[in-house]
Image 1 (cartoon, rainbow, N blue to C red):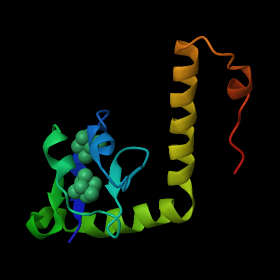
Image 2: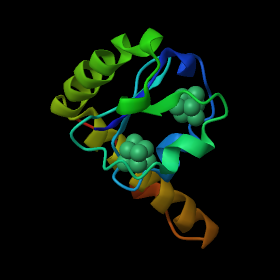
Image 3: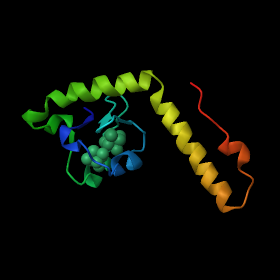
Length: 118
Ligand code: SF4
Ligand code: SF4
């Protein structure tokens, strides 16, 4: 059973959970994050870094959050299928390379001109 983000996550700006996930199965919505149920490997790394304890193993989910199981599944599958995750990942990679290049005094004009075209 996967882990589930509950609506306690709403409005959080500390996405440490996303950073620590070894399989990158978090997806970001406008106001919260969700976990892809087929990709989560139940490692629990995200649970302790969440400041509001918004993440539960599905088996331990308090009844008031049962609705979040479907919400996580539907939203994350939709975003994954749309390629949003790959796009975000790619942009992160480019920003990381750009920061490294700047730090080492490289010519970054080509990289800075780069635009994502779906
Ligand atoms: S740390 Fe917790 S509250 Fe913040 S984005 Fe992650 S799951 Fe949501
Ligand atoms: S339990 Fe592990 S695999 Fe699942 S969302 Fe949390 S960090 Fe990612």
